[in-house]
Length: 272
Image 1 (cartoon, rainbow, N blue to C red):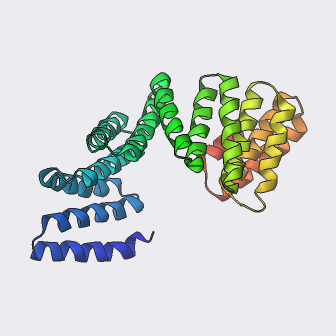
Image 2 (cartoon, rainbow, N blue to C red):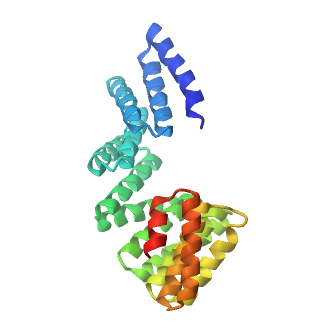
Image 3 (spheres, helix red, strand yellow):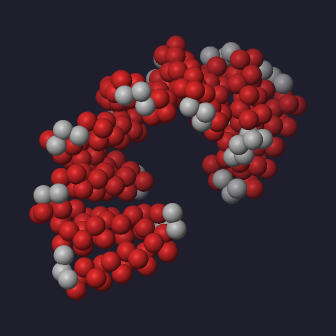
């Protein structure tokens, strides 16, 4: 998406709508204009235009469009760490989708709500919603989406220290990603498996998964993931008391994170 170029057209659309006038067209242009601001990471302006569009769609009773608008408002609040507000709008979108019997949209809303509940530490509710979405995606044979949900469940179970369940979901995600030929997601899943086995002090297995992910970066370069894997390997070698190897990996991770100005990665590489 090229938001600056797109905004020229959405602004023309808004100008045209003001001359006609046409409320439905105005709402649509407000929504797209807001999305352009979202892409520019100007969340305050994005929210302003989304709210204006939503107000019109509430009056014109455009349920499907209003649901989409509420979802985007929820995303803006999520991006700005306003979790309660995000939850309110995701819930509103879910209610609309249930009323219009749009099951696919309901599952998207549940997935968004699961993300919020996880961030709030409400793991039980997050897991319940994730499992509902996973069941739906499997039934629909949407294996890429099922893999994404399974990966999220694995991360959640890892946070809850339910290591056996985490492993099950990571391996399911890995199988689906391989089936769907999503090479980048395969690497990220190997990295998560490395984290899991490291937590269990299964260091050799963790190293094997990290090295698989590292090898895949030659074909699918990703500096952030590269730095993460290098840092994770450094941590393992430290736990194994292989301090020379750990130091080499920490220094390499620091150089990678500095090259992409990753503040968190820089800090972790220096103080792990």
